[in-house]
Image (cartoon, rainbow, N blue to C red; front, top):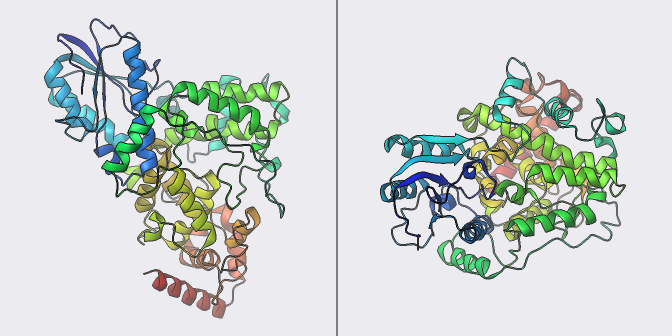
Length: 517
């Protein structure tokens, strides 16, 4: 049940499910004699998209653990559980109930990660004629206003240059004014495949056995959201800061040294490989990106990890994470509706089950449903690539990614999906559509071994749908793609296709679409 607090209340301090940091700006200046922390579990946050059980559970368990810590610190707390009587089911409804009961003089909120949530909470404040003190989220190296100032007047936005500015500003992997190693980017030294032998001596993943709080959440989610996708049988994510710090240490010591070399590689049955599994903890604010970047840089400085791996990892956090947040908050709300390629196909139903003959997609999707996790190449160049080539409406793809992954908060998920993966923004975020035939997946994994489809074939009964759809994509969007310099080589290959080959590919594409329907 929600704790009862006696008015008068100065500040009702809102803590959302992705703001689980005792040093959050909303909590600065907190006076236990005058202020109250407000948290609420509401069904809407699990149902506005059809959230997977893993995603629901990590948010609820992390929130309940954080609430327990708030109580231990002796701070007044009004906390509504999902099952509490009178729960309205929405953040706006629950905040309004708290305002009516406590009659605070002001609402205090660290900037949320979701445009929809911010608008809903602002509306409550407006309707109640309450001032809303909206504070910066300091879990980033840059403020949105800094990115907006950087972007203003530029004809083109690119990650690399924003990343370099942040490296210089914060002195990360720098030697004076020059980057360590004499170059900014070590991609050329990373991204190898495993070869025929497959991954060797993969370290065990960092997993946390569910405690009593998590077990209770698992039971609640299993009952309340029984029809939602995925399974909780393997749930073992860090849901406290202590566990997240241990996960960070395990990554730095056990997996960072080989992270860069194999960051793009895939292998059947190998879920975790050398990836950090820290994005959920970062996005819940159980970890601060500064401490994660500092730990990685320290591993390089002490000789415990090579520069290429460390730079590649830091670029994901200091570079990409900051970049997509800037894109999101400077482009919303219109960004969410962009569809530059006019894609309108529905998302295949088997994205919710993994029941497809395409081995790479089956592997990525079943893994996703089992663990709420897939690494970036599985997302970009398997599930995302297929949807892009097929012409799925980017908003449908966005809803799927937001639904199924434990690290999915809209500020990071939407630009990654709509912009990077689906090219729905027409090149605002990235410089080209990331398209490839099935040969890319064959090169970076063992998924094609034993698959009924051959990535070398674009037509015929054994044609790989990725390869067929790749050529069809280039043909459908040829006029647009010729305006993109980085697509020149791929279009030269398209130019070599004879008219009868093009016709055969078009027919194969239509047959594939019909078989799916």
